[in-house]
Image (cartoon, rainbow, N blue to C red; front, side, top):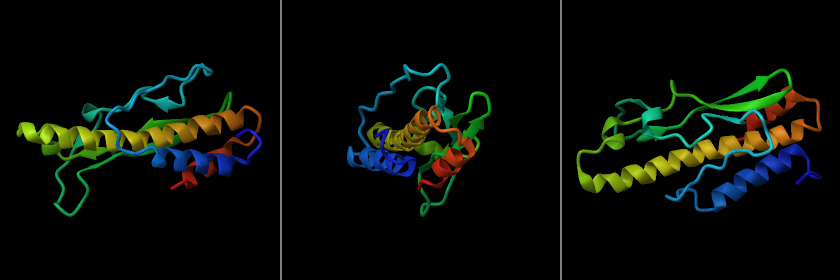
Length: 147
């Protein structure tokens, strides 16, 4: 991927993740081996305890994952930070009282974790590009523009 432009690399990562079956229940976090600073905070998959509880109407989603992209100046690198203030789940989803609802809760959590993973993988790729390219603000804008 090093010979491709950053936009192509980031889009290919996003497409690859989505094609892998997005809501697998066997997601696994892999810590970065080549970096002293993690590209994601927390440096793990989020769980329901990381999400605020919020009631919502039946027409809205049952949960939402929000991530902030931050730029560290020296050395320049990007950080995908889980935004606990804007990430939420309906209380009855995170802690279902009905045992048969636990599977749906676990599936939704895996789905929300994929959203976080996409942000983290985009950030990791952006940080690889930043090692050879000295345009950190341009990379931050690029990562923020990926849908």
